[in-house]
Image (cartoon, rainbow, N blue to C red; front, side):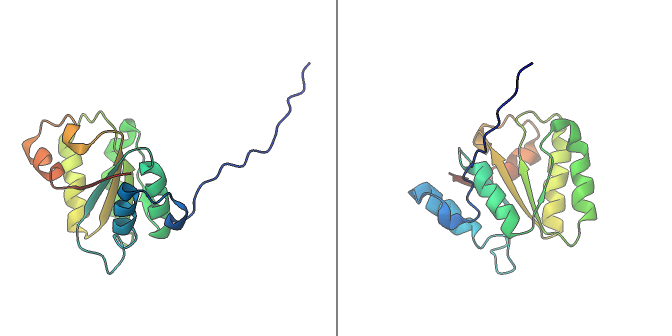
Amino acid sequence: MYNQLSLPINIFEPTDFSEIDKTPDNELAINWLTTWGSQNAIKINYTCLVGEYAPLFASIWSRTNDATVLPSDARLFKNWYKIIEKKHNNKCYTLNFPELIKDENMVLYILNLVKENNSYLLLTSDIHPRDWCIELPDLKSRISTINVFTC
C-alpha cells in the first residue's frame, strides 16, 4: 500500500484586469471590457475574445458583470436559449464558442435573443470568427459584425 503525498499548489489567477500583462493587444481588450456590459456601455451586443488569455479575460469580465456562463458543451447547446429567455434580469452572458455547431439556426436565434433583450454576449474561441465554418448566410453575416479582440 502506498501513501499519496499531496502538496498545496498556489495557482495565480488574476481577479481583475489590473493584474494582467499590459501588452498592446491586452490593453485594447481590457479597455473595451472594463466598460462594456455596464449600464454606461456602448450598445454593441456581441464581442469575441480570441487567444491564450481569452478564457481568463472572460472569467474576470463575468465576475465583474455578474454574467451567466453558458455551457460550452455542444450537447447542451439546445438549452442555451432557455437560459437567456429565463434570465430577463441578467443582461450579461459568456460562452466559449464550440468549434462544431450543427444547428446554426439555433445560434442565430440566440444572437437575436441577446440583441432583443438588450443583453451582452462575450464569446471566446481558439480561432478567429472569420475562420468559423458557418454555412447559414444570415449567421455568417451576423458573425462578421462581431467586435473581435486578440488577447
